[in-house]
Length: 322
Ligand code: F6P
Image (cartoon, rainbow, N blue to C red; front, side):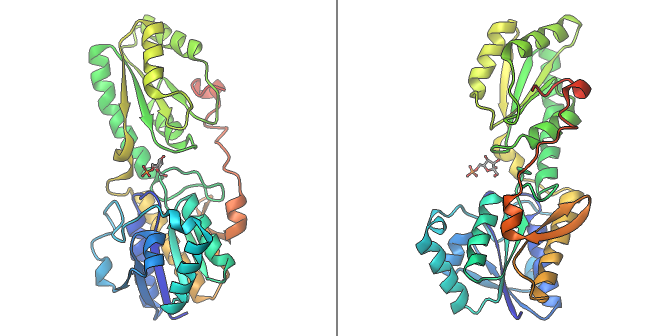
């Protein structure tokens, strides 16, 4: 393994830079040439490759976003696009590739692997929606950002005695909502994995207001079917209490990664290089029970993402509605 490429693709997540740094530095340490590919699979198809040095990844460990830039690439979802990417890899003499991103990125990595490219997938997404790994890089930072927002929103909600619905990201996964709701003491958490009853929710808001609670914070994952504005309207109508909506949106994707995300990213990056140096088959790297793991890429992608029953047990935490 002499020459390797690294790319970040799909939605960015805090910690991607830490993973890029680890791959570049560990690769160079092992005598490899490391090329950074810009804008994910788009740059792979176009041949947007840059030689990386130890210095080129200095001062990025603590930065959010990705210095390699990222994109969603519809062309790479076609046979023609994938073929172009494979021929670019051959032309540039890339012996192995590290792809950092979410489910779509790892699926793309698997497509390349099926066509003979050696690929290591690193889970970089705030959504925490990959079944084979306990955590994805960026999730911890995103939840921390939501927690900061909950604290601030609670201050003003109490002063005005309001209900506030906070919409968080996560695509089809409720993990950001669940973890932030549990750690932030939300009144209720609405996730796509569970149905909820709007009558019960409204009654609960009224009951807590009647016992003197000044505010109600409802965390709603974006994947929950009802549109957030509509939900706010219904809650206001049924409770007679002023209800506001805060959509945290891209705020959750930025910011300096937490210690957890930096460590996870660094360990995954180092593992990817180690596996490439060993000429291992393509793998998906992640973490299970605090250990770094590497599974067959295709098999890893088949693992269902299981919602955390323990954390969402309403008998204990009384809020994620079944
Ligand atoms: O996958 C990360 C994520 O931020 C999701 O939570 C969200 O649904 C989506 O990306 C937004 O995508 P885009 O950046 O294309 O608007």
